[in-house]
Length: 392
Image (cartoon, rainbow, N blue to C red; front, side, top):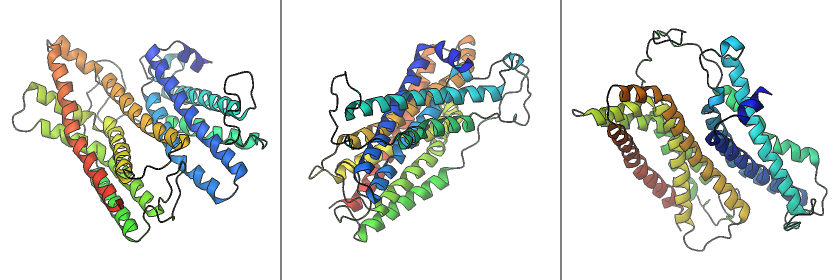
């Protein structure tokens, strides 16, 4: 009940983020139900492969739900809450419950929409509009449908609880909440950059080897993608997965490096502030930025690869791609909001000291420009290298 009260009294922007989580869960749940309908009419390995293609939308939805849970002001530790029994552990539970409620709402909407398109629910427009595609002549296994719909709420709530679990205080800091607490040490450089570069190179190498071994698009081998994108070999897909993971791991290190470069060679106040902020927020925004670059490079490579004869992209394929891309962009925006909330005290202190607001805006523009100058060309290079061995 407390989680529902906190959700009801939240700010409209917070409610909007929760509704977006519910919408993402609804789209993913609908894809899972469509996969179930396909399995009802085509039992066999093809149904399992279609279910495997739903892993990417599930991961993107869970990633977005966790990012929203991190920025939820209703579950943020504040002074005095422990006295009424709302310590870090209880707030973690509330965050997990709020995430589960939002995802469950989306899953239920997906079930209603699925039943409506099958023709099981009448009285609304487009009753049974997709009855043939959704196996309306077969009885729906309710247990299997509910199990698939429970995947996103269970995984998202568990991931939120894992990310927001209470941690011990850092060495050299006090457990109090007054101004007497010692400030945090400067953020160290993330250690994932070498691993990210190695995975990126390995992904491109695997993709090149798979394409030269005769297992390229059009050979009819590998995992056929739903919606008409047939002939996608397992080696190429594994290379794309390694490339995406490499970009996600390298994102924080590249962001930290951008901040370091901005502060080099006698920096002024604006460059110094922009560089320090990027270094402090490297872990928070670097990984979502790397994920966005991975999604953008994959989309660009797909456009280049299928620039000739355009395949018959079905609505489910388009929905899955929209879910992955939309969740990646929304996660980056949510991480930016979280970073802004984290440095709100620093911004207020600078304004109290007389720093002009134009300096803060210039620092924000400089940070955005530096990130675009690094990640933009990187995304283009990775996309070109990924599409080059696959070109006919």
